[in-house]
Image 1 (tube, one colour):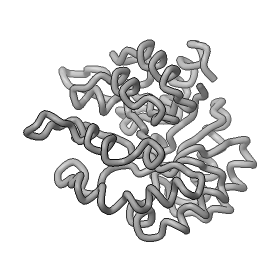
Image 2 (cartoon, rainbow, N blue to C red):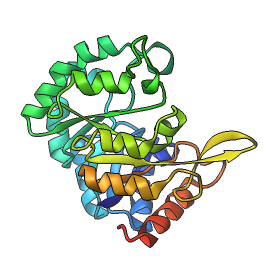
Image 3 (cartoon, helix red, strand yellow):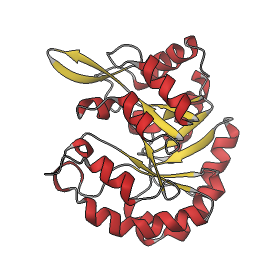
Length: 252
């Protein structure tokens, strides 16, 4: 398994192309060779391809605008092929934490997921905590999504922090989704002033030994470090500490 950086961690430094370019260099200088592009300013696919090449980086996953995925699928596919990402990701279900509608999501995105699969790419769904709410029959939204889309149509970017925040077991969910988790998000959870908060990998309480064991068995290829909130610390420093911890565990 290979270690990458989720650029949403450093999104505040990617508000224009100059900052985005500089950020890619800083991430590469830490030692990362793989990135997920998410939360950045708009960019042309060829520009990103060239910037990645210049820094020895590969984009393996994105979080792409849901409307573009749904309504301009062919262009999304073409752009991903230009900058070399096989995984087309969606960061959240439209409606988000308050108004998520699984039925609408399934109806709206199944055609796009099929088209993406037919192109040789793969559609990826990223979870938060609300997907672990259960309906009257005791079924979670995650289970509904996994059943509604075939493994060929959609994979899951399992986010360790949000699974645990939602009351789930990150390692168990990776095991449950075996074969559908080519990339996952490594994000730790610590307790500060009696509240959960995001933490550098290895500085919180998530059982990453089990997470990594199940990820290996589930066919995961990429472990993407993400920390949406660095609690006032320099996010590049947080990415660096996570990278050092992961490499100390024999990953690279």
